Length: 109
Image (cartoon, rainbow, N blue to C red; front, side):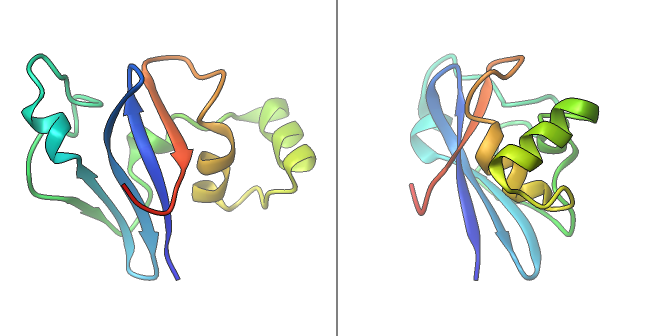
């Protein structure tokens, strides 16, 4: 079973992030790639048609996660396993984020 999140940059759909048994895939949205002036979500993931694939959650997305006391409070209040990084991302990275990228839980684009 896979879980998916819609990735937005400055409120514009930028791509889809998916977790599966094999690992993680980030795919830029074709409309976002074609959009004039759209920027990559981060320097380590430039815009490209080919998907990014990793056995582990991409460092950029891991960096969106809270740490310390905030992480503890989020996990307790939202009933999320603190080691479920992707679950934490889907439940917490759609609000109160520093920066322009947000992630919303979603089934598909």
